Amino acid sequence: MASIPVETEFSHWRISNAHSPDHDFPVLAEVDVVVVGAGPAGVAAATVAAESGLSVLIVEGYGFAGGSAVAGLSATICGLYLASETEREPEQVVHGFTERFRAALAARGGVTPPQRYGLTYTVAHDPLVWREVADALLFNAGVRVMFHTQLTGVIMDADKYTGIIVHSKAGMSAIHARRVIDASGDAAAVARGGGKYFFGDEGRIQNPTMFFRLGGIDTDAFWAQWGADTISPPAITEAIVSRREKGADLPREKIWVFRSTRPGELLVNATRLSDSDGRMLNVIDPEDFTIAEMLGRKQVRAYAEFFASGVDGCRNAYVVDTGVEAGIRQTRSIVGVETLSNDHVLECRKSEHGIVRSPWPIELHSGNRPKLHWLLDDYYEIPYNTLVPAVGENIIVAGRCLSAEHEALASARVTAQCFELGHAAAVATILSLESDRGYRDIAGSQVRAIMAANGSSL
Ligand SMILES: Cc1cc2nc3c(=O)[nH]c(=O)nc-3n(C[C@H](O)[C@H](O)[C@H](O)COP(=O)(O)OP(=O)(O)OC[C@H]3O[C@@H](n4cnc5c(N)ncnc54)[C@H](O)[C@@H]3O)c2cc1C
Image (cartoon, rainbow, N blue to C red; front, side, top):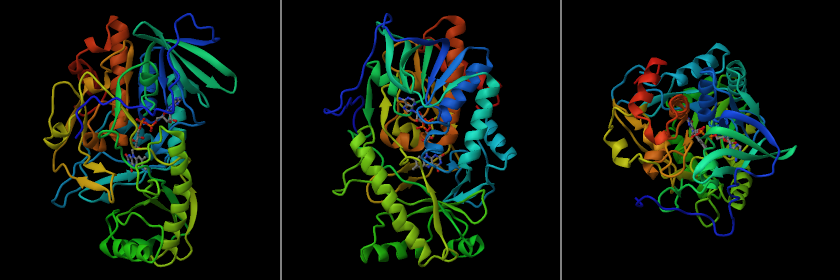
């Protein structure tokens, strides 16, 4: 594991940078809080902050909320249940905003019951219902929402973030804010403000994956062959290897298939996207991102063909859709006041400053096959200070760009945890504004206590 921090940027891409407070862009809004990115973390952060009475604006590059869970079609809410080697019913250990969102999906028929995933369980969500639930939460909380709006820079007064610069069809504009919550997954605001960050293990990050939905399935026949576990059984894995040896483009043999909320449909996590020489693709580089998209679509066809030509129940299978984008597991991680270490995860450490539990295994997508390291009958807690950048004032991150070592992030990045990380960032922001304190002066234990009162299991 690389020592932290390792700051890396692509030499041929220069990041657009900070502007001074007397910039000359038209000012779109002056708010208490601007949230960048409407993935699970951003939706949670914006909703909770606005419900406390703060004026909140969220900007999102896509025309819908959901981030990797929807645009990347990541399909399930992982990280809810304990893992165990003994046969046991699903035991949910993460609640709070996560459970609120899951229950809202369930009320609209947009989430499945728990499905077996190795030694634990997960639930699959419908990507359209996900967007609708997020729309309703943001609207009802009074959040001002700007879809199709991209952060391009930040406004800085010395080391204080005082707003952001955005680009939309209207052109460039400024949003002034007393606090910035960076829920972009990519630490987009932190990076543009000159904050410190790193990429995975000395620049080596996890593979992107192009997720897809497969329709036309006789699901009874399919599950009778596949079995109860969503992870591929040995016979399927062997069949993939054998096809690959005959020239099929099936680089990954351990693949995952989830039940969907829709009849006759499967959600398939199968592809592995790396460059032709095996090099890891880092989607912060637009050329790598493009390779991931094109390769992803090709590989989806190869896996769909594999299903149609030999897997029970799949004779009439067709690709319903791929993700809007190749799914991104990892890009920049901030250098935080504290970093979630691999040992913290492996030893299931807890602390009075922990703001979300995680029972999810280290699920590492790098190299030839995904690796799973299970946390058995236990969970760890992510410390608050992993969300607080080591440098810069009035900014906090939420979601997968938290400060975490490579393997630790491979556990902490999943959706149940990202919702709660957004919840935590909102609570810290409320405290910070109420008491006029910087994020570094807020005790994680205080955030934890408020989250517990909000229904988080802490
Ligand atoms: C292939 C794949 C499979 C996965 N499978 C699962 C799974 O089965 N279960 C599970 O729980 N998790 C899974 N995950 C992980 C999970 O989906 C993500 O880690 C989680 O969605 C991250 O949430 P987030 O809110 O931190 O960031 P994201 O979901 O990445 O959201 C960030 C948002 O910010 C927006 N944004 C970024 N930059 C800007 C900008 N400059 N301006 C405006 N908007 C911006 C993006 O468009 C995006 O909507 C998977 C991920 C991938 C990639």
